[in-house]
Image (tube, rainbow, N blue to C red; front, side, top):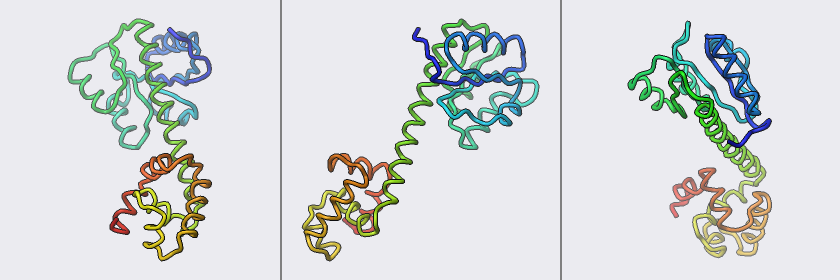
Length: 215
């Protein structure tokens, strides 16, 4: 199995100190940053990691039930991938956990390779999620730099209208539209019209423009 070094953090919530310690040792030896907690309260008090992460969560906790805590995180918009572990699992528990978005459900005792495979899949999912969110934030920042007229031109161009058609819709000259279009491409860091269309779809601009201009 490929060793991941310094590229992921695994949070472990288990009220059994021996189990918690054993999981932590395995994960550290495999190159992960590890944070161990005896319950949900300690986990929440510590704050979420700032790098790609996942949560290994025991279902049978002395305080809050692990499944209930998982559902609470989901309801609060915490998108941390969860791996559920338990020594007393059943089918209804498994179904409930998976419906709440669990990456995997591991019955104790589980093998080292089982846990590592689940953790690597969870870390990869969180990494992809963080990358997607970072891309959206960059697009939003670039879009905020556009002038109101440049935003109008962007919205119409990505619906498939030619410069001449955009000019007619906005009561501008075709040359002015070309200038605005060039500014849009530069500010949005778009390499092509297809690139710009993809960006607009991610930002929800295309549908908004279709409704606004009835294109």
